[in-house]
Image (cartoon, rainbow, N blue to C red):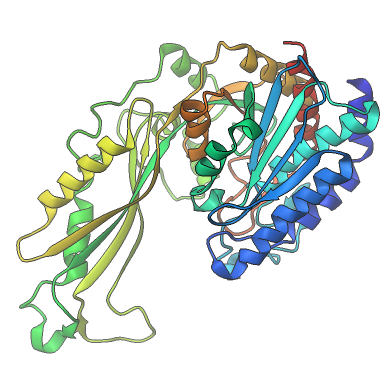
Length: 454
């Protein structure tokens, strides 16, 4: 391990330069105009694997391709499957970026670029960890497979089918995923739970076409007014979700979790400052960590209708659309939530108004047992990589494919996040701490060693 870690430390500058090359590829998976860029990013990963002596191939799916790589030269040892993605979110609003989003720059110890933290920088740590082992010893201490996809940011629609059709290629004892965050700077973290998600689009229609507001205003229902009232009633006056049945399956955190969370070094004001918002608001009687880690939410994420161009237009809009999503916690299932939301929308739709609710993507929540040998190995690896033992946390976000690994393939997952909550993933000026990038590579190398000891 000393030689491997020394190799990692000696190659720090090169690791950053190679990550920059990957970050320069504008692999926005949600935009068809960037389909070739997503493919280029996947191909770049394949080349990087081949360069260090790991067999890799680009695999076609029903959408964007993925890279599958493997080194299986450790008979009798466990097999680790590393999952990650090289597709990224759109960069808009472009005007809010201080530097070009696909021209990575180093500022105050951070690498700024779209995809730096989510997820190119984090998944790249495993490739560099494997490289260090191969460079120093000529082999890896365990068998390792990689699945690096190009569709995570659009919900991984084709990955499950590909894995089911290629079960031998993804057969493993444990999965490692680094697509989450540390609790804070200097606090390496092991995530033991993810919230699930169910997303919706609600269309309200009050007529066949927009009409003149002078001729008809005040005498016909305005679709935006109707929609606003409907979505307002999805919460009560104390900001609890007002959808009957939605809390029925919610599991409260265990006593040891609450105790552990209360010891974490973060105040409500620090949470607010990290968010960048002017104030905090949410379910009463709950801390911000409980609200984001252990309680369901319903968030309106977009609303459109009527005239959106410059200047004024005197119309009564006949159509308005809201997009919203629910985050689900342990014991909740998307199907039950979807049905509860459908019933509530039907109740809220006034007579003489048409509403159409469409379900988007969804994933159940994930709970990870903390008493497994895999978790113990991850704890030791994080301590080796970061110089201190990790804290146990949950994440409020969703990684749908984790549910597939656990429930469909029966493979336990390790969620070792190296990012930070202020990395501004999905927003302008996304960043990744170079200190944590290097520590992540060391952790990946140590994880291979620790798994070999099992």
